[in-house]
Amino acid sequence: MVHEVPVIDISGIGVAGDPGPGRARAAAELDAALGTLGFVQFAGHGVPDDLIGRMQDVTAAFFALPMEEKCRWLPPDPSVNRGYAAKGTEALSYGLGADSPPDLFEAFNYGPEDVPADVLAHPRAADFFPTNVWPDNLPEFRSVLLEYLVAVRALAHRVTGLFATALELEDDFFEQRTSHSTDVIRVINYERRSGDPAPLERQQGMGAHTDYGIVTMLYADPVPGLEIVDPDGSWLPVMPEPGCYLANIGDLLAQWTNDRWKSNIHRVAPPGAGGALRRRSVAFFHDGDHDALIECLPTCTDAHNPPRYPPVLAGDHLVGKLLGPRTLTVSDAVSTAGDRLVRAEAGSTAGQ
Image (cartoon, rainbow, N blue to C red; front, side, top):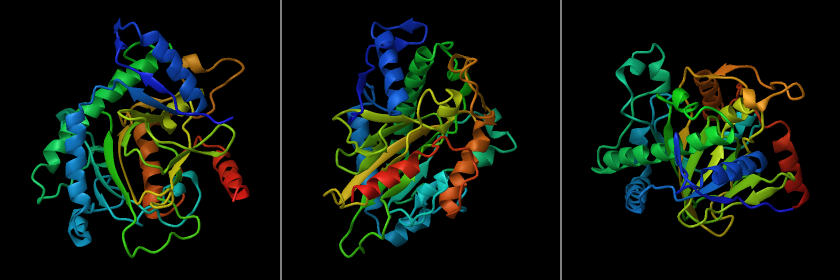
């Protein structure tokens, strides 16, 4: 059976404490989608089209810069989740304990600049809220990207409020644990340029991985490339519907829900493999407060389904996950993938 990523219209869900007429229906649809695929699409998201267009324009201008110019904005250390990441410097599959050739993407990472002063006073604040690295030759780049972050962060909070409804939790359950969330936006460019060598064996645009935090909100070009693992273990191509955000949950929410919801494995084919020489995506990672304790939710366990994962602080989990792909070493953070990657890779090999 081939599954499709469902579209849920959230324009009528209202807000916590004041539910709209579509909230119960949307919560039920969400529960079904995240329990099956771990992915969903949101229509009625409320992020202005004009802002999305300006975000695309300024990021396209950045990636069009010469490589030596972009490399002026590298982070000071691989552990710093900010600035430019050049093609071939990461391999996301290491986050699942698998080695592979480096991935064929370049990216620019940044985070919020409105973090409360008391949060920045924390002894480990630099680990979770490092200083952004901004180009000094693109006048609107910083202002547009920060405006975009505020808008998509608001969308993520609407969505996590709907999570609380679906999981039968207090309306503000996630709000209490995301007041200073270690949010990051990663603008990603997959592009095959003239003269680029052919991909190596097993090399991907982005290697198979799960996301690390609570939820990812993705705005992507409507071109082939993204693939997720179908429940039958095969790779399912996914393209966003026009005007929709793709969303998927990460490992922290899978642990919170005791695998009621799936942090699904996904990858991106090398640029050109599906006909498109370029694919752009912008991923907003909503990862929770670094000091939030992630432990099995009471609505997701019973005598026949005990907790599967030990409690963990969100920040410790995220740091462990980030370092593997960037240092090309196997991550020691807990994975929720089980043997799904092995089965998916075996299935794709058998079909060749």
